[in-house]
Length: 334
Image (cartoon, rainbow, N blue to C red; front, side, top):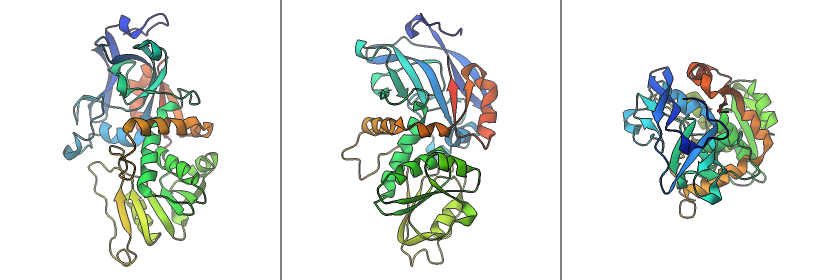
C-alpha cells in the first residue's frame, strides 16, 4: 500500500497495512482490505501508536494462557491467540470520515499498529487540547495506572512504595505523589532509573536499599521477587496491590512468617474492570477521559524512550521488545 497523500482521505482507499504476530518472535506487515465506514463508524488515519513493552512482549512470545484468551482480546484485535494475531492498544489518529463535528479531530483508540482503520464511533476518545498527539499514546498506560491507584485506596499521608520503574509503575507513582501528604517512592533494581524518577519529580530507591514499612505497596515490576519485598516492607494491616501480569509464568510468594500476624492484604488490579469503589459512577469513557486529562504534564514525555517509522516496524519490533531501555516506544506514521 502506498502512503496516503495529504489530499487523500481514508474513504479513498481499500487496503491498509498492519503489524501481525505470525509465530513466536516473528512479525510482519500485512496488507488488508479496509471496509468503508458505515453509519455510526469513523475512518481514522493513524499518526502515532505506542508499543507497551510488558503486555506486547508476552503476546509476541505466545505466553497468553488459554484461560485468558477471551479476556485478553483487544476491542479491535485481529486473528486469535496464540498466532497469528494483530495486537496492540495505543493508537492516536485523525478522523477523516465521520460526523461533521468530529472531522479532523485527534482521537485516542484501543487499536493495533495499523496505518488506517475503521472503528465504531464510541471507541474513539477525543484528545484534550492540552495533550499533544505524540504524548497521547500513553493513554492506555495512564488509564491502567489510574485504576491501580483506585484499587490501592491511597489516602493523604500514606507512605507508598511502587515497585517497577516501567511506564505503568512510573505513572502509578506519579499519580500517587500528587495525593496530598503522601510519601511516595519508586523502587527498581536498575539504579539508572533514578534519572527517570527525578524527571518525574519522584523519590527513588534501588530495590536492594529499600528500608522501613509502608502503608500501601504496589508491584508493577512483573517480578515475584518484588512482590516478596513488598510483603517484607508492609506495615501492620498494610495493603499490597499486585498490578503485574505474569502471563503463563508462576509467581512464588512467602505467606509464612509474620504475613498473617500483620493481617496483610494482597489484592489484584486489572484495567479490564473499573475499580469496585468507582464502578457505580464511572464508565469506561469517563475513566479514559480522565486518563487523557492527566497526560497534560510535559514531564511525562520522558516515558517515551524511542521512535520508529511504521514502515520499519517489521524489522525493528523484536529489538524494541528485547531492549531493557524500552519504556513506551512510539511509532510514527507520517
